[in-house]
Image 1 (tube, rainbow over the protein chains, first blue to last red):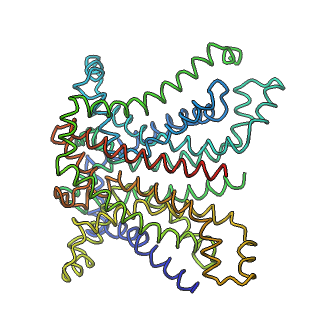
Image 2 (image 1 turned 90 degrees about the vertical axis):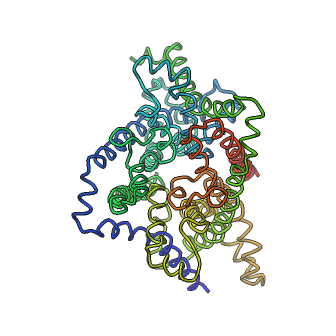
Image 3 (image 1 turned 90 degrees about the horizontal axis):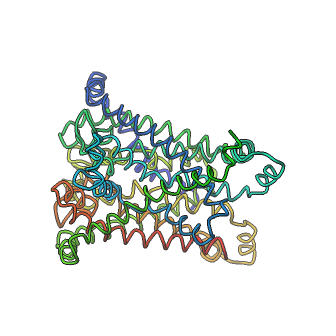
Amino acid sequence: MRRLWIILTYVIFTLLLIVPLVKIFTGAWEEGIDGFWDALSRPQSIHALMMTGIIVVLVTIINTLFGVMLALYLVRAQWLGPRLKRLLNSIVDLPFAVSPVIGGLMIVLILGPSTVIGALFADMGVNIVYALPGMILATLFVTFPIMVREVMPVLQEIGAQQEEAASTLGAYSWYTFWKVTWPSIRWGVIYGVVLTVARSMGEFGAVLVVSGNIMNKTQTATTLVYQDVENFNVVAANGIALVLAAVSVGLLLLMEWSKKRREVH
Amino acid sequence: MNEIFRGKAWSFGFRSAIMIYFLCLIVLPIVGIYTQSFSLGWTPFWESVSDPLAWKAVLLTLKLALIATVLNMLIGTMIGWVLIRYRFPGRSILNSLVDLPFALPTAVGGLLILLLLGPNSLIGMLAGKIGIEIVFHEPAIVIAMLFVTFPFVIRAIQPLLEELDRSEEEAAYTLGASKAKTFFSVIFPTMLPGILSGAMLAFSRGLAEFGAVVLVAGNIPGKTLVASVFIFGEIESNNPQGAAAVSVMLLTLSFLILWLVNQLQARRSTP
């Protein structure tokens, strides 16, 4: 019986995860290394990968800063009543329930060129929708809950005593944060960063709607994969997909590593 | 510097900035979409929602997400169990692989299904010969949803199984309960909250999924057009109000599920 379950587990993993993973690596080489190289060295590929890189870096930095601060407030702040805290706490999760396409649509509806705010920004010469700022906003929205959700349980677990002790002994708040709070939430934050990087790199629906997918302007790696498939250029799509998948596997390893470290502390 | 930071005005400003950022980024867009869908009044909203193509898309999404979720509950429960309880070669590698669908961009997932099961692939051709169409038909959408939501149930039941007190199980067993009886009266009730909350998260993710589905769905209106792709089509054809109306239907549903999950988790943490 037990052997049967283990074999069944292996079968499902092979069919659902391992075969696809192998397929990306073989698919990209179908036309030899030249085919792969040609796919990657197209100007739109380089541009798309660069756009993805910019978005990932900016989104991860902004989300980490605001996510950690918000988690601190939602767990520790005394100026928020318990009821308000609970309300805010459930609002944090909302982006998880929103389809990425709808997330993109929201930004187009509020900040699009035909809206009041959008027109205001356009007058100042800043385009939000169909440009980089909108894409960053969309990704920020989609990835917002990740960091808060990783840090909050750790903060709840360690409790406030150490921090209180430090501040009654006269340590300033910044100092308390770095010396007392940070060491205990560190691995939670790192895990959150890895998840945020993965999610913002892979974000597709929201970015597709907000960016308009304009080649060499607002195209990201994932939307380029989509366009290549639509144009029946599967080998090129495979090349980009291989780069993305390689990064994903790297992130997966990082996830495992930080998860282990988190358990130790 | 520290003196300034401790100042009341400073910390008030800092707090407000974080809260305003939070409200603008998350709450404003959601309020915006609800107002936009009713922006032209109740009648156009009702027209967009009662358009047969729109509600067929929503119903199809519900049906396929439900199938994917049930499959996920079965597979996930089994794999979660095997990975925690049994020791066998390769266990820790498989355990790390579980998170792959979270790390892999969903568009890449869609591309892979297309490559592996598409009309030019071996499996696609074999299935085509016996008259089963996979890609651009319902099976491919279910597979895409299954792939994307694969980790949810497993990750939800693993901590519960780890916490489960082995002695309870052994007690039941030594008191003469059969293995199956032990499983269903001791182990299964422990796993159930995890299975349910994992399944609900998987269901809501399945409803929302776009990247993996859009490439393999075929998108034939009324037949293989799911809600998120329908919304995308409405945006592309410059009908934001219609897109917002269908979005509101889907969003309300997802929020309801999320609320249920929260209730379930709250009940578990305060027994």
